[in-house]
Structures are given as C-alpha cells and as structure tokens.
Image (cartoon, rainbow, N blue to C red; front, side, top):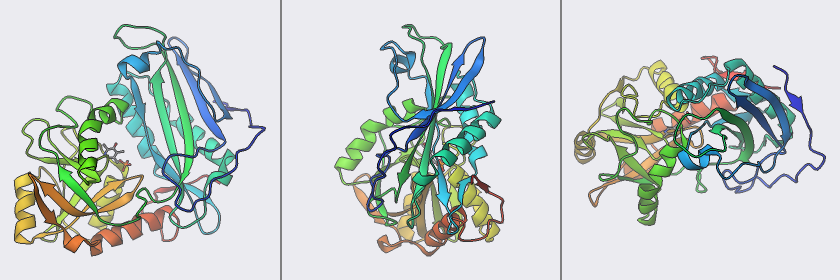
Amino acid sequence: MDITIHKTTAPKQKPSMDGIPFGTYFSDHMFLMNYTEGQGWHDARIVPYGPLTLEPTAMVFHYAQEIFEGLKAYRTAEGKIQLFRPNENIRRMIRSSEKLCIPPVPEDIYLQALKTLVELDQDWVPSEPDTSLYIRPFVFATDPHLGVHVAHTYLFCIVTCPVGCYYPEGLNPVKIAIESREVRAVRGGTGYTKCGGNYAASLHASDAAEKRGFSQVLWLDGVEQKYIEEVGSMNVMFKIGGKIITPSVEKLTVLPGVTRKSALTVLKSWGYEVEERDLSVDELIAAAENGTLEEAWGTGTAAVISPIGEISYKSKKYTVNNFEIGELTQKLYDTLTGIQWGKIDDPFGWVVPVC
Ligand SMILES: *Cc1c(COP(=O)(O)O)cnc(C)c1O
C-alpha cells in the first residue's frame, strides 16, 4: 500500500532530553489510516502531528472501542535507527483487535507505517544515553452514533515521542502495594488486550496506591484474589530460591508482554530455571519472610526492567534485596537494553533496522 506523505512546513523545536518527562513532547508527524466497512483500510498517510476532528458522538468516547500498542525506536552508537521486535507488537494488536471486534490492521502495512514514520522523523530519535523514541499506535471507533454495537468506521493512528527513563529517578527500586480489593482483569475479559478501558478501570486503585506513597499496584487474579498477576502496567518476575517465577499468560488475564517474553528467553539462555505458573500471595510473602525471595522486578517497554525494592501487603512491608537493584535484575536490564541500543550482539535476531 502506498503511504502519502504531507510534510510539515513548520518543524517544531525539539525538547531538551535532560530530564524529559515521559510522553509529553511529540514528533513532527503522525500516521493515519481509515477503515470503512465494505472498503477496508484505506488512505494511509503521514501528516503533520496535530489535533483530530471527531464528532462528539464518535463511538470511542462512549463505548471505549479502542486498542493501542507501545514500542520504541533506538539509535545505535553508529547513528543507525532500529526497532525491537515490532512484529510482536503488531501481532498482539491483531489479537487485541479480535477481542474488541476491531478490523485488524494488516501486518505488512503496519510495519511499513512504523518504519516510514520513524524514518521521516529520524531526527526525533534521540542519541543521549538511555533515550529512545516511544511509538504509540492506536485504533478507535469513529462512527458518529449512539447505541452499543460494533462500529463500522475506525481510525488507525501512530504518534511518536522522544523519551528518557520512564521513572524520573532512573533505574531505582520502586515500592509496590498488593491490591487486595480491586482487580484489573477477570477471566473471560480483556486482560490480555491492550485496550484503553483496562487502564481506565485501573486508575482508581493505582491512584489510591500512589497517594499512599507506592509507585504501582501489584494486581491479584479476579477470581480468588489470591494469585499474583501483574504490577501496574508491567509484567512481574520474582527470583525465589534461585528460580525465576512469573505468572503464566495462559488464562488470558495477564498482558503478554514483549519485554516479558524477551526476558524469559534471555534468562533461559543463561541456564535459569523459569516457571510460568500460578504464584499465590501466600507463597510470595512466605518467600519474603524466610529469605528466599532474592529479587523482584517488573518488565515493560517503557521502563524495560524496573527493580522492586519493597512490597506492601495488608499494611505490612517486605523489603526485597535491601531495597537495592538485584544482580540479576541489573544484568537483565543491561542485556535487554544492550540489544535494543545495539551495544551488544543480538543473538536472537530481535532488532529490525529502520535506517
Ligand atoms: C504494555 C503492558 C505490559 C508490558 O508489555 P510490553 O510489551 O513488555 O511493553 C504489561 N502489562 C500491561 C497491563 C501492559 O499494558
């Protein structure tokens, strides 16, 4: 498919990367493509970044038929630009599409759109240490219509923004609180999809946790509220008695993270025993109490690896690894980011060059 390009005549001034807040400054261009029932996806175009015009009755505003993705473009020491496993994000969005009854964006057009947009805005891919260009593709229902049913028209949009570390404090351990009342996902629901509604529904609990001084909530399963699922919008892993334990994604309540999948592959290649299974809070707290909980971390594109230094449960606090970054957590961060920035070999073939 041809992508029409309308270049901006007023390029923006680029922000300073020093302490840049996450997701605040957007690059010069965005990608748009429309879907109309009977016609399919059409009018692929790149236009100057700017407001969209939508009817107040656009169905997304009322019924939240929307999905998104998050990935990054990295600049290597040689000045080249590369993506990290973009087809994983593309395929995940196709799975999200199916659940939300949104017509899937074909994989080849999607990848072409990502590469073309990043190449056009290549000057926006920063070169400072620990920086990258965050890419946010999303699709939503645009029909101007009230009434709950599957929409007939959609817009696919991709915007990008230069980012530094996700947490202003950098790679430091965070404090998390186990949430024992509210849940993020239920069996048979949308937990495995990146749909906006999941995040709207998580705000109440995460806002309350933040006000109590925690950076994220550790979600439990929606059936028994007994098993660990995810931490905030990251997957979670624990090193207990030398083994790596992480909640399985099989029940479709946990988001199947690309960083999670990559971390597990790297850990297995290092000879670690990895268990993807149910992990109850009781088992986790027992491990914290008897000293076998060695390390804990979250995984996600935005922060890559986020060490967990303290876990709070029912007003008791458990410190992990003396509130320091664990050795394995650090090694995993260095390896994944090393591959992403092209600082080390990519033995798994994960990197996709852009230009
Ligand atoms: C995006 C996301 C993740 C992490 O997925 P990555 O592909 O590694 O970025 C984990 N949990 C939730 C709820 C998410 O939205």
